[in-house]
Structure formats: C-alpha cells, structure tokens
Image (tube, rainbow, N blue to C red; front, side, top):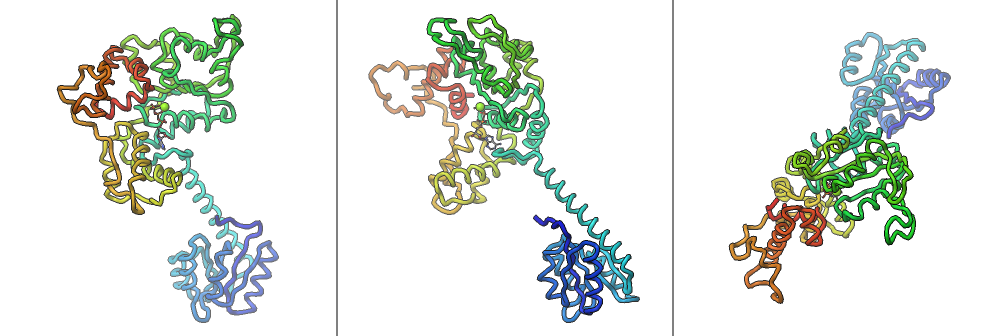
Length: 463
Ligand SMILES: Nc1ncnc2c1ncn2[C@@H]1O[C@H](COP(=O)(O)OP(=O)(O)OP(=O)(O)O)[C@@H](O)[C@H]1O
Ligand SMILES: [Mg+2]
C-alpha cells in the first residue's frame, strides 16, 4: 500500500541548479524530505517513492508535460505541481487538464510555494482516505469462507452484520444445503461472543427420550444410568451461542422448555429443582416451513414468535444463480488444493452447464459435484463432460414403483432387472409409508439423518 512516511518526501524536477537548491532548502526547513532530479528521465525513477512532484515544464530532452503524463500512467495517485514560465498561462491550463494538481507561475514567492504544496498534499490525503473508505465499504459484507457477491446474498450478509452484535434471536430458514450452518457460525464469530462457545444442537439427531437431558443436563441419580451429574448443551453454551438446528423437529414436550429458555433464560437440570440462569444467544435453523407446522399444530405458536424475532431466509441456489460461478471457483480452489489437482479453472461451457442446472441439493450439491468433477478432469480447466450432475432419474417402472416389495425380499439380492437406484427408491418409499409420511421417522428407519433423506428425495424428484 502506498502509505505516506512520517516525513513526506517531495521530488523537485528542475534543470536550473540554483532554483533547485533554493526550493530544496525551503522544503527541508519546513519539515519535508526532498529528492532532486535534473531531468524528467531521472525523475521517473524517483517519483513513485514520493508523495508529491514539483516539476518545471521546460526540461532537457523529455519535457515536464510528458513527465506529468508518464507519472500518471505509472501511478496516478502522486500529485504533480508544474512550474511555468511567466506569461504561459495556456500551458498551465493544459497541464491542469492533463491532471496536474496545481501550477506555480514563475517567479513565485516561497509563501506561495508552501501554500500550493500544503494544499496539494491535503487534497491527496483526503483522496487516499476516500479510496480507503470505499475499499472498506466494499469489504463490509465479506465473511471468511462465505461466497455471495450477488444482490440476494449481499442483503443476507448485510443482515448478518447488523444482527451479529446483539443478543437478538435469529431464525435461519432455507432448504437443505443453502448455508444455514455457515451463516449461524458467521453470526457467532462476528458477535461479541466470538471468544465463547458455539454449541450446535441438532434437534433431529437426538432421540426424543434423551433430548431433555442432552439439552438441560441432569443430576446424579436423576434416572437409572445417571451415575454422575452432567451439564447440558445450554449450560455449555453459557455466554456464547446455542445453535438449534432443525428446530422444526423438536417434540412438543421440549418446545415448552425451550420457550422458557428463550423467555426467561432459565431452566433446571433433570432431577434438580435448582433454577439456573444462563446468558445465551440463540440462533435456530429450519428447512421446513415453520408457519405450516404451526398451522398443522406441530409447533407451538408462542415458541414460533419467540424464535421469529429476526428471520433470515436464504434462497435456494437456483434462485440466485448469479452466485454459482464464484461458488464453483471457490470449491474448485478448495478441492484442487486438497487433492493436489492441477485443474485451475472452469471453461466457459462448463460454467454454462453449472449455471443452467437447478441444484435441488443447493450449495452442498454444487460442492459435491465440483469435488467429483475434479476427479474426471484431465486438462487445466473443467470441461462440461467432467461435470456429472445427479439428474432426477426417470420415474420408476410399474414393477418396482412404490409397492415396498423391495424391503421384504428375504434372501433375494436384487430382483432381476432392478437397478440399485430403483431399489433405493423403493426402500425410501416404504420407510415413508411406515412412518406415515413423517420424514424424521422415515430417516431413522433408514439409518439416515433427516437431511440425508431430504437430499435423496430431492435428487429423486420426490420432494
Ligand atoms: N455461500 C456459501 N459460500 C461458501 N460455501 C457455502 C456457502 N453456502 C453453503 N456453503 C457450503 O455448502 C455446504 C452446505 O452448507 P450448510 O451445511 O451450511 O447448509 P445447511 O443449510 O445448514 O444445510 P442443512 O439444512 O442440510 O443442514 C457446506 O459445506 C458449506 O460450507
Ligand atoms: Mg445445517
């Protein structure tokens, strides 16, 4: 960065030695450092080390006007003051048009010189400051590891920046793989709580009967097997942030207790009647429409309103395709580095293919696709044929579609003509049927996380 040194350095370009000496003495005695050049050629070698250039217009060989132009080509931020001979105002005007900061008609007083020099340096420092402020503004919504220069993501990152500083509860909504986890962490890391714990609580992963003790902890002897006292997730998150992922999956019995944490910031450990106070910031995430769950009676209205204080909705990737190229490049760099791949770019045609796809699995799917594509790529840049997309497969044939027969086939391996894909699809349908459409329960039956199931359903076009 061009940063002015403690003592600002001024370059004087003048072929007349006497005048050069007078100027140097004056500037040095007022606290500047001075460089001297007798020709334009010499000046060009020195100008980028100086905060200001004062040049005569008439010089041997290359003249002052040409020097002005060269300096501007080299580094447009160094201001140039030109000294012009008596009666050549037109030339001075021309120099100003070409970008000179000011001019000094000869002969000039030393006071006049100083006034012009101070003004030029002052204007320059304001300009530098302005450039710096603009750069900072451009950086404002930039977060580590989050790609999103498009208007929609910028708006989201703006909200993140705004809400991070407070203790306000944030509700992140968005399809699977849109970046809710990433945003939740960004909120924590940009908050005054950054040095305190960030505790993620995956409401789907914890079995219902263990949820209370996981969340709120328990006292020794609270239940059979409680051999010692254990603090819960909320206590671990004290003074930090608790991230309640998949909040839509919290069973009603726990919803009441969460409400109390949100309202009063207090709770009791299982088997204890001592009320504990905590200072915790809550960020919750959901990929289901909580409002619908509310209407269907699966989610408490009072809890919904306590959570919905500052909602941030992350749009699916297909609705912000402007972010796809940069995201793709981001993942390409990441996996290329990790795997020592020599692929460094994405061809135009490959980029088109990526942007045109509908990304049911959102950013997570894009990440997976790029990682996989790198394994197929042979050149320096990704080609369309390197990119294998998981197109939604054709509809299942009548023989295997939806009858659930694939689960009860006894010793049989795979029925003749049934592909692995069709088999998987049948298993998923059967699980959904047994769970009466409840995805969390179906996921448990299949030994998958709810997210993994949703991802597969989306891929199969069954969402
Ligand atoms: N804007 C982004 N910039 C860079 N990486 C991103 C972005 N959004 C998502 N990712 C990456 O995509 C993957 C999925 O994101 P994340 O886990 O945050 O999604 P999610 O919304 O929490 O999904 P789920 O609902 O399935 O839990 C992660 O590896 C994450 O780092
Ligand atoms: Mg997540």
